[in-house]
Image 1 (cartoon, one colour):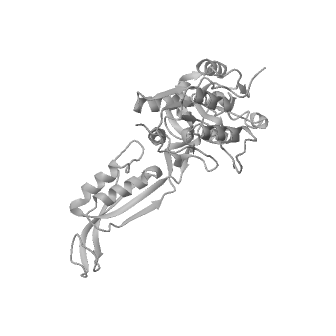
Image 2 (spheres, rainbow, N blue to C red):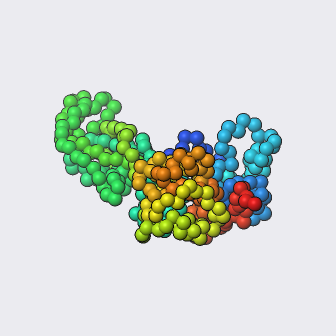
Image 3 (cartoon, helix red, strand yellow):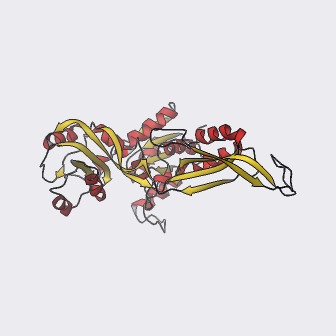
Length: 365
């Protein structure tokens, strides 16, 4: 049996919830994680029509990019679309799940996929996250160092850039005295003991800390292993908002925009400022990304492709960077394709289907 938890856990393996922005509401919004998942309907926004489609197709899990409940929901009495969607989903035992800014913030998510679709290489995160890295320190008898280190690495610790199994080790003397109810690994209870130990330091991303600490405890020979967890100020370069990469060669800005419309079929109109230079370094941010214009400039981008730019931004940055507003939906429409690929790879026989109702709420006359 495949449960809702099985499906969403795989999505969160790609896009851990700890990477969502503070204002967001990603995750399982309606339904029990322990419920059996019969089939899933994948969409961009959850509308009343989407719920009707799920009922028609007997899908009891709907996965969207935008959360159906975004702000405060104080009453559920059917007075607006959000309330009606939640009521109908509950009545029909349909679970609702969203991967939003957490999907924006990871490699393989919205922004790096958008960069790949535009033909960029050497893709990096535009605005890396902060305060998502932790240093984990423990103290281990010398003979057990390799066992504990390996367990921590296998649980996800020790990754720095393109390197893994990273740690720092210092030899020293540990002291302890066990009480009456202890069974010391070394020494005798009630007697102060000195033990030759190694201080092992390594790093872990926030989503791995719990697993790393569990692995540390399980592999450590002591009854009460000592360990410290420190929040680091370092930026984590493999997660964050936006992406930046380079084209194979310089292009006229107009030719680049023509190619954007070609490779992103939903794009009908591109709002832009002056096309004053050739472009090679391209920054992108799917959705409402105009708040990251300065990040794109600081990163040396020639052009910034995003959605929801404001009027004055086109003027204010006219001589610094080319802004290309391709639309909010248009820059993220492929979110459901990401969901499909993740689910299909892990559960190839599970019925996951793209909704026929993936549409842009903004229309053009």
